[in-house]
Image (tube, rainbow, N blue to C red; front, side, top):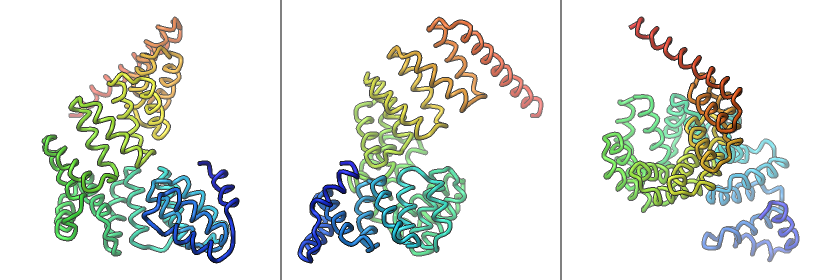
Length: 365
C-alpha cells in the first residue's frame, strides 16, 4: 500500500473521540494482531495527536521489526518536522538509514548524538558494513561497555576481531559470549564460522541450520548457509536461502549477486538478470556482479545491454583487462569491428602493464 493511499485511508477512518483513540491504542500495542492492522492503528493515533513523539518512536519500532525501513523513514521525518531536536527520533532516523544501506548518512547523524550503547552499536554496524573494521571494533566494544547486551553486537565484535587478526580480543570476547549468552543462536553461528575456516562445511551447515531453527530471521545467516549450498551445487535450496536473506535485508548486494548466479544455474535467466542488476545498483564496486551479468545478458541475446554494462565496468575498474577483453568479444558479435579492435588494444596494454608490474616485483624480491 502506497504511503499516500495509506494516509488517505487513515484520514477516512479518523475520529477524535476518546473511545476511538483508546481502541486504536489497544490495537497498536497488541502483538497478536496482524502487522497491517497495528500499522493502521498507529497511523490513526498519530493523525489525532501529531505532536506526541512517543507514537512515532513506537510505530517505527514496529516498522523496524518488520524490516519496513523506508516507511519508517517517512514517519520519522514527519515526527522530526515537529520536533527536529528530539534525540530519540534522530537516533531512529540513523537506524532507518542503516537499514536502507545508507551507512555514511547514518554515521553523520550518530556522530553528533549523545553516546549510548544503542548508538555505539549502530555506529559499529555502519562501519562494519563499510568495511572499516578498526572503527567497527572500537564502537561495538564501546556498545558492550555502555551496557548493551545484544548477542548480535557481541557476535559482530568477534567477527571484527577476526577480520583484524586480533586473536587476543577475539578469544576474550568469545569466552565472554559463552559465559553470558550461552543460549543465543548466535553461538551456533560462531561455531559454524569456525567450521567454515576449518573447511568442514558439513558441520558448518548443521550449525547454521540449528541457529536458523532457533531464530529464522538472523541477519546474514541465511546467506551463509545459502553460500555453502551453492558451492555444493544444491541450487534450489541455495536460492531459497538467498530469498529469505533478501526478505530480511533487500539492500544486501551479495545476496542479490548469489541469488542471480543461482537462478542462472537453475535456468531462470530473466529473474537472474533482475537480481544481478540490483546487486550492481546496490554496490557499483561489485566486480563479480558485472562479470556475472554480462554472460546472463549474452545468453538472452541482449548484446547491447551487455555492452552498456561492460562500459560501466571499465569505468569502475579501469585497470582490469578482463572487461575490455569481454567487450571486444561482444562488439565483434555485433559486427562493430573498429570498436572491438580498440578494446583489444586496450586489453593488450593492460596485460602488458600487469606483466611489467610482475617483473618489477620479482626484481625487488
